[in-house]
Image (cartoon, rainbow, N blue to C red):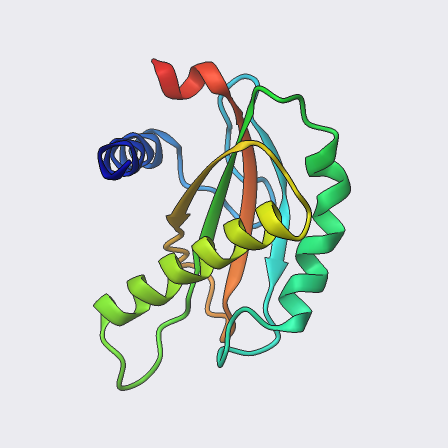
Length: 144
């Protein structure tokens, strides 16, 4: 189980290196078969997984339900820099937020897809609040 998790994270790292930087309006060029579904923003940063973020994620669920069973869902979390908090903590908070969203989609909405979670370093955005970006990829994208 741990090996599968590590292997998945390695594949995700490679994926993130291959994806061009995604702007806030165009979301970059995605590979064939991939689809950008949306961004959900938090209303605050303590805790980042607040009711506002859950409501925003709930709005994306109808799109997620329309995906075929072969689609892989990539959940990327952005956690803004805070004064007095180091970069390592920012990364841990972002990864934890992505994992919370993953568990929320699996348990509350019973989505049975393959998920990957990652952090999203959006250095261009100076927002004060955490956010989530959800994109789907065809399963064979991760097999190559």
